[in-house]
Image (cartoon, rainbow, N blue to C red; front, side, top):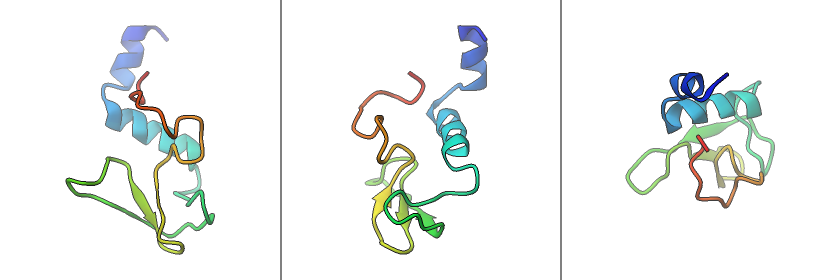
Length: 78
């Protein structure tokens, strides 16, 4: 796959996030703190995209939580 094909497949951050979430959570979203499958998608001006809250421990997480990408400011596309 060349760079143009990659850009066509993943044109923005949302497409990248959807792809990575399907790879990281193939059987459904799972809290990295408690391994609970019950979570809620958080939305709003003060919440970053792709942020979820565990229905069990009430902690917030993203697909990068507890990964090497957790504290990076790099866009997912990179």
